Image 1 (cartoon, rainbow, N blue to C red):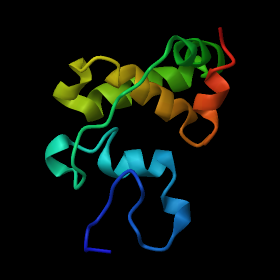
Image 2: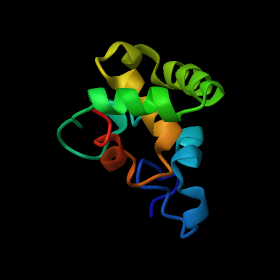
Image 3: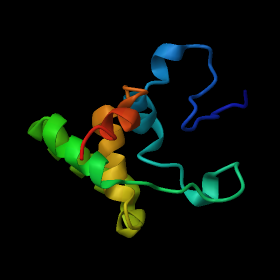
Image 4: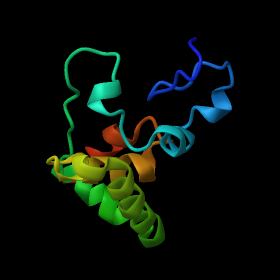
Length: 108
């Protein structure tokens, strides 16, 4: 680990409790800015019809409102990138569930 190293995989301090989706989003925001990414290439942001239905059906209204506000604030100008804000909301609502995307496929 490097000093101040952090990202979507955690901060590598050996404490798994602070590497949840919620705590990572609190530290670095909704997404790693492209200029700060150590990886080459660009992530494909996917937000399917099924994910939209699951978000509407299973994310409590208060949590969804918090997700909207947090994602728009954290994404800044990136909020206009197609699918980025709703994908961020999905992560905010279900990021602690490693099977959320698979579960979303059950929605037709």
